[in-house]
Image 1: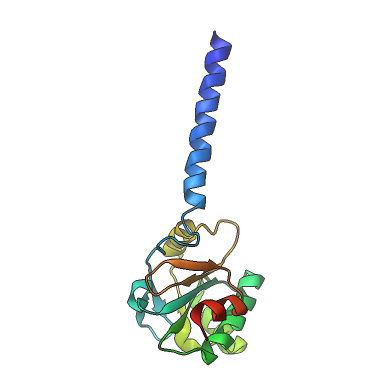
Image 2: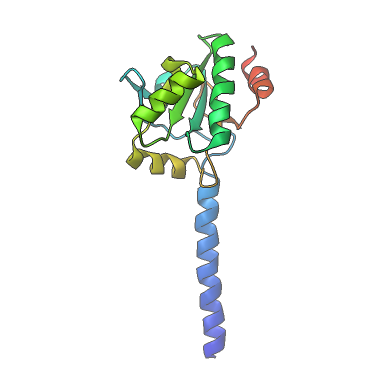
Length: 164
């Protein structure tokens, strides 16, 4: 009887663990409302995702320590420079702990300064959880209604959705 109760208890714990992790994994998928957040632009201005409602927003989370996300930041910045500003905007969010390093990378990589922002360390962990980025930084194309239209979209995918 003790063995049966132990197996049932283990099964219940396992079930709760899986369901809790499953809920978090589906937080940021295509078709759901994107979690809102605020960041500080490189010029010191405050920006929020909800402030861009009515336009497509490519939110690119990147860091100097994550090579793939840093490369994406440059690729997306070049596309955003050519996109129609009234319909599409790039909101690049940096997770570096050093604002000096962040500014140097923006300058060195030739990124569009007006689209760059940095998030404080305490807010970074919240964004990582809300956008389910435990396995690495990602990019999200948000539609004019605030829903996630694509995760890690290619330039071709962005152009087909946005219509440029």
